[in-house]
Image (cartoon, rainbow, N blue to C red; front, side):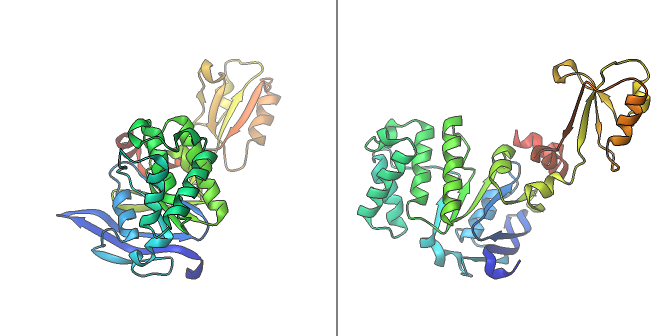
Length: 310
């Protein structure tokens, strides 16, 4: 991909805290107009990486370019940012809090107040327009801060663990907002350790662990690293069926429909099915299961890292 198509590019980013390399040579290239996820377990270096990309902290090594600027802070008025550590003035009303965040990015106060009211209404939070932040639930307060990060209609939006602490309703609101921002033409970069959101939203993603980038590509690219699984249920189960199935076949428990699960061989399942039918076992049920992003994440990062993220 040509560099002019990247909203953000970074090469060889390194950040040390004491003797520890929190970020260790990370490369990222985010296409314009895309939703790009940075995935990894807690402590992987995601937040430090995002802060370097935005110019909040400087890398010890490496370079980055944001919206054509070698110094990311020069693009700050064109960027929206939701930090991992949330915080709004508790005595401020929702509309004013959103307008205030827009004003920090150069947006006219009256324009910000008008946009804030519209955005709250569209998000189903019209009742909270004149409520003070301290009166809102934690999830609603977080969503108000999220709206504040997009009120200036940024070209580039960075969301650090945006789903953290949100209830299912506000998670759906956030997913809808991310899609709307992408449809508007913005580029969205968000970090998370929750695979489901990334699987639904991301055009591309990077997986980092231990400060290193372990994978970069599409969700399908990640899934393709693992073979597909077959779930077969015989019509006439009987002893001896295992001899006709691949060596890794395991019996599925009753809660999953019984039968057998096994890795789909490279040559496909047709030959196995012919043998099963010819032997009189028949087919009561058959499904081919694609590996999910969660499974690919476990393979790429390792089981230990997944447990740390739980």
